[in-house]
Length: 238
Image (cartoon, rainbow, N blue to C red; front, side, top):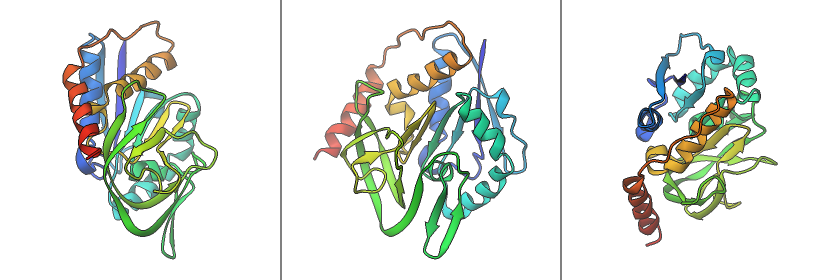
């Protein structure tokens, strides 16, 4: 039994320590005695989505986002099939935007992958700061850091949660992120998963269930992670 994690374009999409999400996934698997490996895919690499259990698509600048989107369009059908078949994906900031219909910047439109029915508009000002989210996926709040000019509108999709502190998807509707099948899209950097162990385990459990492996994740001592989470919640409330 081995979990395979695909890190998509880590040389281009790695803002605010997004690579730390890979570390969190690996550690929480290894601490439970579950074998795992990471496969990194650069811009010119072919991606075998069928061989992956979890895919990470991080955040990047608008220029890097355009490069990645052009390349991913070549793999769009395989990526969409992976997601529709329950493949686990964590998409952050620019990676989150790419899963949608488009990202409009002034008169320019960056066409997305059309996997999720979401749309992003670049509007005046940036949404920056610590974020605290109430999510049904976790008992503790989901926390992270946002810095984005795009405003994402998720239509009829389910949000990751309701914003308690911060701006979230667009600073207007009170929602942050999106959940679709086993996909989590979010604006939260930091990295996200080390401070949100329950969210990390949700992804791991989804990957195990998608492989139909009869294995429950053993509980871990998350005292340090819970303290980091609590500190951010309290700091954001000041």
